[in-house]
Amino acid sequence: YQAKRERREYALYQRSSDNYTPERLALHTQLGRAIREGGLCLHYQPKIRLSDRQVIGFEALLRWPHPDKGMIPPSEFIPLAESTELIHPLTRWVLDEALGQLRRWQEQGLGTCLAVNISTHNLLNPHFLPELAGLLERHQVAAELLELEVTEGALMEDPELALRSLQAIRELGVSLSIDDFGTGYSSLAYLKRLPVQVLKIDRTFISAMVENASDAVIVQSTLALAHNFAMQVVAEGVEDDATAAALTRLGCDIAQGYHFGRPMPAAEVERWRTERA
Ligand code: C2E
Ligand code: MG
Ligand code: MG
Ligand code: MG
Image (cartoon, rainbow, N blue to C red; front, side):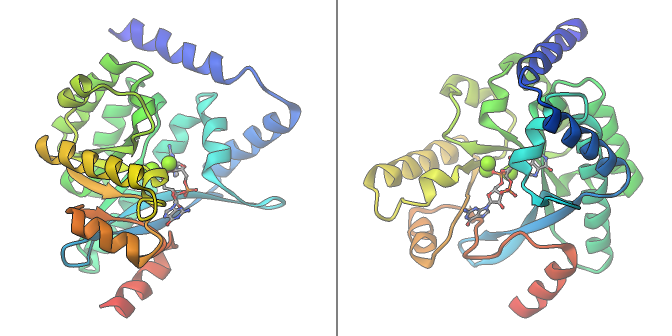
């Protein structure tokens, strides 16, 4: 099992590291430094329960304010980190920071859940589980308040290993969700076996669902599927009231998007919450 894990991880690195340019190498070095020296930060985007429009949690989203290049989006540097072992200290930093923030919110009486995105490389890394348990312990945060988001595509890298890792994480008490659902190729047979509580419908299906009948059908079918498996559904990328209303009508549980709140630094979250209350 262990050996298979290592071979698998090595294969993943090999595949993603074949397009190394001097610029990518330089950026990689700078990213390593940013992780070690506190150069990264997290923004937090609210998750809204549609039935009563209450804030039920936040998703932590990683930001890299680069000294020369401005804000580098995660879509540019996460793949870079994933092409080497850098993804491990990166995720460790994110979890450490997110759990510290969750603890502070708890102390301020702002009870909330927090979701963190993890990469398939983390899931397949044997050190991940003990590290996660150690961080929960160190920050004295109840595992139930943490949710880990894994993309559907990532699970397909090695479905059996991913399933076993997810089961072990779930045994800690941490919640699990499938991110960008609808963009991968997981079968219903596989989905049925996953110890997952939440499906997040990808933004590409949400953004046009009001005008596009086939997107609306995909959203409806996903809702039926998830609810039959006793999973909750989050709609990603809700940008206007018409979409929020349509999702509420269809019985979608939770929404996230610019319509409700953009990802914001922790200091702004506190202001945003008092203004909204
Ligand atoms: P994701 O987890 O699916 O996150 C949702 C993305 O959609 C975020 O982009 C968010 O800012 C954006 N978004 C939210 N609401 C709206 C909306 O109404 N309209 C539009 N157009 N976009 C919206 P972001 O922050 O650039 O992150 C992109 C992806 O990078 C994330 O997708 C996630 O897969 C990955 N990512 C972000 N932070 C981390 C992290 O800490 N670790 C890992 N491994 N991946 C991360
Ligand atoms: Mg996510
Ligand atoms: Mg997503
Ligand atoms: Mg995404």
